Image 1 (tube, rainbow, N blue to C red):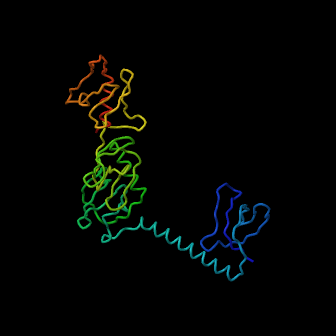
Image 2: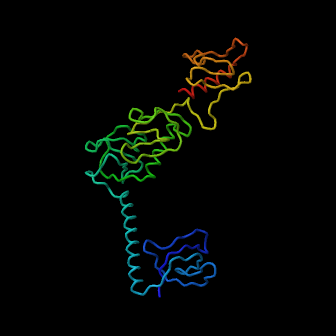
Image 3: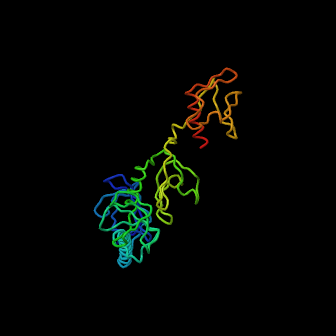
Length: 294
């Protein structure tokens, strides 16, 4: 008799746990060697051990029916895999080109294209022939295929790094007129694969519909080294709730005293109490306020 069952087991050849069977149960020729505490059995020539669950004997006709069903499922999985692979290898007919898909050429490496006007062949992307990103350009519509996620990420991540979008860099949200905040800080880069194709980080757009943001270079902050207020005369400083006054102990100092007017600013300060705010401390306060209030 044949055995039909679901099982959990660990191969003696390694430590990875395998869960066998499928929706209607796995079909195997199973021979139990030892059932003390846990089963030891043979499957496809391998000696394995583990817990065997819900197994039952079936007759030859039932066994063959289940084997046929299993083969059908395996064939369907293979067809789905081939269909998915073909999607990224076959040439897309011109009449099937869309505006929400990344494309590349089948006969030229390095291109990454998204169309904004399929009829006219206008779009944005990376033009390998000039080695640069183009916000609006005419692209030939022949011999195009869908770009894989790896191809898209390789090109976009490389361009982002070349343009200075590395972890901790502050940037203006290039799509801020549409939605989102006005600024963001680079963290994990993520590609948008549909609709408004672009690149974002922490839900803020670095590249949107072909247009790239610009890093705010003087505003680069890594989380672990955020600017902090210096101690002055033994007191920690804090910003008032309305962000108009800097408070040190009982002293309240207007924030505007730390502003810069062109290349003019107050280098150091002496309060009426005689407490001095040195040039390094003034610089530290300005950096802190720039970070908090920008």
